[in-house]
Image (cartoon, rainbow, N blue to C red):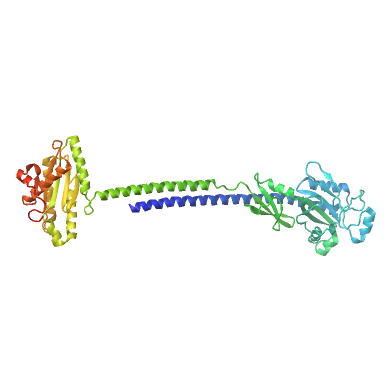
Length: 500
């Protein structure tokens, strides 16, 4: 019983722990799947932005090739090129920065009536909305230009942009600035593409410096880039642009569960952080834990109830069982006898009570000791089991005294059963080494619907019959109905005559 109880408790613990582990596994799998999906979203958004920026930088390089081939070009030509650059891609503004030698600076400014500038320009801006306006930004005045260039600003003296101009001039490749404030308004990124004289050698840094005509410049508005990233994301997602570990656009996602991917524009890298609001929930894992713990609690309660019932049954069995033989004890026997008498009266069937006492059993305890006597008692109980039916009530009343209730049994059948039992006891113990011959005296008290006896009277009659058998010389069977009146009135009491 204890083994079954602990097995049940192990099953309860296994269910509880299994539900928690299962919930953790499901939660981990959902979180991994969400992180994988979010990384894919971040990569997809970064590729979207990179593709758009790459298209614009490529167009800027095409414009630089046109400026290089054309040499001197009119405002109209610039507007055509600028319009094509602003019509597609992500550029918000574009222009051309002319490289004016210091020796021609005064002559250039005097001819144009401009303030003293190293570099002046005219540019085009694409504002929000459908309406498109063009106004001077960074278009350099060229010889023969028929329009009056507006006032500009000296890009070369701008400490924010000057290093990128030099880097683009010396490398011969497009160079991107960090996020800065654009002349056209707002924050963004400038990309400078150097323009060299057509046909001039540009293999070395010195050659590139000597051949420099100017720069094709483009501006990317940061909101345009983040909008391009939003296109491929699910609704409600947040996008943050990070430059050198510092957020430059979008909400602060430092405390959120995010995925990031690099963005490359020209020669510079940024980091795009994406936060998807559709993260894994806790509903299913919590439900699994609640269900598992509830099931474990229910099973635990059932195990405890079952164990309590088993314990009660065990206590009840022990209370009505003889510890040495496993037969019913006197208290349980009297209960069963009372029930059999009531059943006999109700259904009108006969029965009999057999009282059995071993002859000379005291000699076994006195000569061989009580352990040997206990072994003899246990063997006699085994013999009695083989000679009784499942419906019979077999009990040890104490010491070497046994009782058997035979329901639905007439007197002749009861006498035959008693003789068989006496013979079986005699033959089983006969000649066993060290143990004196053991026999039994059996008294029979029949009962039925006409006798109307209570348990005490039936026990008294069976006991009287048994002592009559002892008085007749032992190893005998006697029935109460055939005892002489004087013998019945002088019931032999325990302890009378020779030792039993």
